[in-house]
Amino acid sequence: MILGIESSCDESALALFDEHSGLVGEWVHSQISVHENYGGIVPDLASREHLNKFPLLLEKMQSKLDGIDVNRIAVTCGPGLAGCLAMGLAFAKSLALVWQVSLVGVNHLRGHAYSPFISLHKSDPSKFDMNLQGYLPHLGLIVSGGNTILFRLNKDYSMDILAQTVDDAAGEALDKGAKLLGMKYPGGPLIEEQAQQGNRKAFDFPRAYFTSEELKFSFSGLKTSLRYHLEKTSDDNLEILIPDICASYQEAIVKALERKTEQALSFSSFASMGLSGGVANNLRLQEVFTILAQRNNLPFFKADRAHTGDNAAMIAFSSYADPTGTIPANNFDLSFYPSLTLN
Ligand code: ADP
Ligand code: MG
Image 1 (cartoon, rainbow, N blue to C red):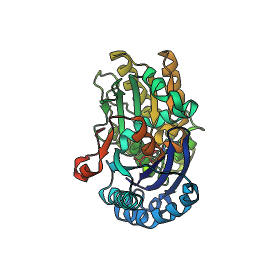
Image 2: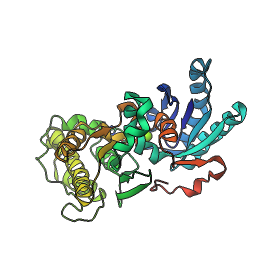
Image 3: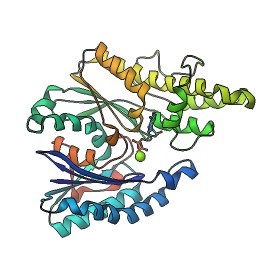
Image 4: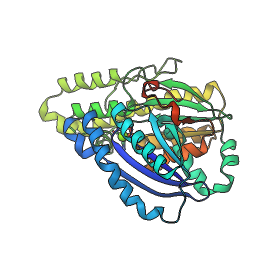
């Protein structure tokens, strides 16, 4: 049994994963209510919350621990907020010492990259390794509040980043756009809710690198163009236009994500496609990617809702599924993890 521990940003999470039966339980404390009034994550408050909440989560998990043998602890060791990671690492190291079990680190982004395969494992645990091989090379897109990464998972489990954002992440663009529209944090789901009532062709928001073959994303110009757009719109009109604005803004992001993924598919061959990270919950994005996968005759794996945001299940799972991805405990060094790396 593997215990996963996640604390890289604003979720404190524990999960128990068994290679023969899959997920045994998950316990998550989300800090959204702590940060929403500030319009984003306050790192110091986040670290304090982790410190307070991990003992409570451990207490909740205790009943599941009766009669089972945890033989590995997998903890997120980067990238993330240094103070938050340090809380999870200290907690993981203490448990590993007390329980006398092995401790490994997992790159948070590799956790996201593997999260769509949790359901593949669940469908037939004993054949997971063989089944996964059949779906490699895999083209995955991680879309979260902090990252937008298109990557290839190769047959030898190495990963190549094919495209990433040069400025804001897709989720960040949604959150910042929502803030301009006077909505709360996190704004992605709120924009989506408004967009469902709106016309996605109403306004023409910019789609960076759209006609270029360069595999890059950029979303900061989009946010600026929304700001100009709002400056030109009178307050009286704004309320009725919000659904159209949200639908068009969301569409610009979805289409930019689709475009680069489509280009990556045309540059080399893949055996499957995947979608993960918080923005993967977006129904329009799911729809567009489902169609893209169908057009290319590729199986499409989307992370389950419980595993799109930060979670410990993907950390425990990826320490099992990814034979090359774990980091020995004596190599933890927070400075090794700039935000955009998969290693
Ligand atoms: P991070 O850990 O980097 O903050 P998460 O993986 O927790 O990222 O995802 C959070 C991001 O996902 C936020 O930017 C949020 O707005 C976005 N998000 C969540 N649900 C949706 C949705 N339904 N549509 C669009 N964006 C969403
Ligand atoms: Mg998060």
